[in-house]
Length: 340
Ligand code: SF4
Image 1 (cartoon, rainbow, N blue to C red):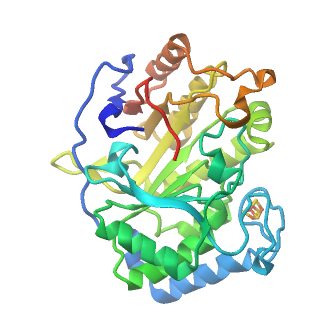
Image 2 (cartoon, protein in one colour; image 1 turned 180 degrees about the vertical axis):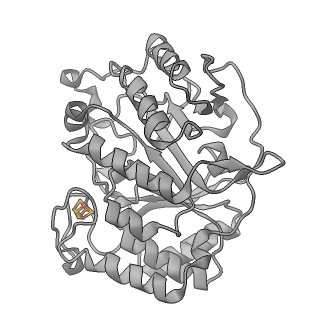
């Protein structure tokens, strides 16, 4: 996403066209990351528990049992060391994340989903990237902070929780103090999310589907909806809703739910919004994304998603929004493109 093409606000129960209204980001409060309050002993304990789970890996809901401590690679493509595609400032995330200076985004290689339309498939599915030691990853985080990043934003992090905890622990000793964003598909194990409680400040989390058959067909997983909904409830309990201070600046703590409109499946929007309103909070911030294009395997005609989202599908999603009771969020400009 391009900052200059940033989102229109979704306002109240009114259907807002994608290009109807833009506002300058009001900025982000420069708050300290929550992990600064975690004691060394507690941090070490969580790192130890997280790495133990790599013995027969059950870190994510795949539970594929890969022996990652012995460098065996799991379904996600990850072994022991973190593999990073790129670490850079990113100005195209949602306003509380990108702020005015950009988000310190770390694109991790590999993924525990196998989405046929993944726009980041060179890193998620083909595992492009560079293997890093934990100290080098910690240094990269501190470097992002020195470049002005508002936060450290781990993209596709679910299969790298131990490595993330270890890198944050080391980086904290090197002076890292900015908040942490966990940018996830929400196909997360609750016990892994528990290890992040008090360490992650912002959850930037997808709710991709509300139909398990669609999830199975497009992402190769049979329990996405049930798993993601439980994960979102846990994330919301940990960090609550995004808030602003008295001047309107975003406080860097809270949950943002992302919903990517898929062609021919815009009907799921009403269930996505209903889940958020009923099981999270009517004050939850939602980011509606229209950037879909048929990447990776999505060009296969049998899948039926080999085109972009139409204006009619977009209007249908906005109608669902107007009836949802939700009132906070953004909708992406139809002309924007995504990917790493
Ligand atoms: S994180 Fe990777 S290795 Fe571990 S259970 Fe999930 S898919 Fe398997």
